[in-house]
Image 1 (tube, rainbow, N blue to C red):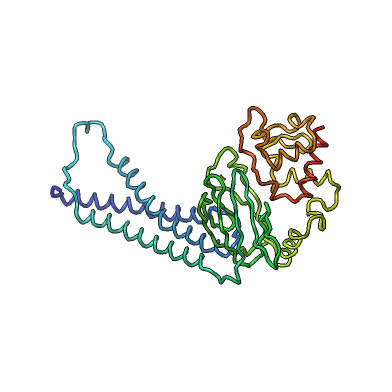
Image 2 (tube, protein in one colour):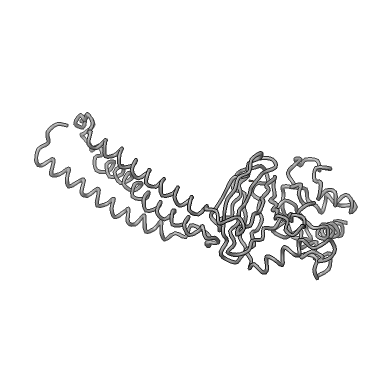
Length: 357
Ligand code: CUA
C-alpha cells in the first residue's frame, strides 16, 4: 500500500473505530434479540435443555460474525461511495495484506472447530445409553402417510402395535426407526430429537421425556402428497397411566371394548375416531357430518353413498383395493387394519355407513 500521510492515517483509524463501534452495538442488540425470541415449544425431554443451550451458544457465536460482515459492507458502501466529480478516480492499488489474511483464515477456523467439538460432545452426552433394563424400546414405523409404534412383547404377550405414541415420564426411550416406502423423518419438536426413517436400514434416537402432556409428532422429510398430514401425537403420561394403557392395549379382543368405544354409543365413537388426531381422516377427506373438508382424498359423503359395510371396511384396511377415479393410488395409509382395534374399526365403519347412506 502507498504510504499514507499522517492525516489520512488518522482519518482511517477514526473510520475503523466508528465501524467497530457500530458493529459492537449491533452485535449486542442482535444477540439480545436472538436470545429473547421464543424459538421452540416447551422442553419435553431431558435432552431438550442441552439442545436449547447449543442453540443459544450458536446465536452468541454467529450473530457477531453476521453483524461484522454486514457492518463492513454497509459502512463501506455508505462511507466510500462515489461522489459527483469522482467518476474517473480510482482507489490506491492494494496487493494483499498477509497479516489480515492469516487472521481471517485462522479465526473462523478456530471458531468452527470449537463449535463442532462442543456440538459433538453434547450429542454424545445426550445420546448416552442408560442401560438396557432401564430403557424402553419402541419401534417406529413410517409409511406414506402414517406412523405406527410397536411396543415389545412382555410376559409372553404379543407386541402391541398402535398409531398412538404413549410414553412413560422419566423413562429413557430407545426409538428404533424404519420406513416401509420412502424416506421420512421422525420428529417430536418438544423432545428436540429427530432422526430420518430410511427404507432398508434401522436408525435410532434416544429420548427421556420428562414433562407430562401431549406433543405433536411430525414428519420432517418431504415424502409425498400427504407429507403435511403425516402427524400423530406423543402422549407423555405417568408410569401408572402408561402401565394401564399397555394393559388395555394388550387386553384380549372384546374384553376392554377399546378406549374410543367406551360410552357414548357406537356412532359417536365412530365419529370420534374419524376426527381424532390419531387417524386424522378429516385432514384428507371431506365429510359433512364430521365437519371436515380435506381435499386430498375423495369426498366421502358423495363417494361412499350406496356402498355397504363390507366395501367401507375394505376401503379402510386395504385402501388400494378400489381407488376412486381422479385420485392417486397409495396415498392413504395402509396400516389402519393394524393400528385400529377391531372394535374401533367396526365403530368407524358403522359410523361411515350411517352418515353416507
Ligand atoms: Cu413422511 Cu413427510
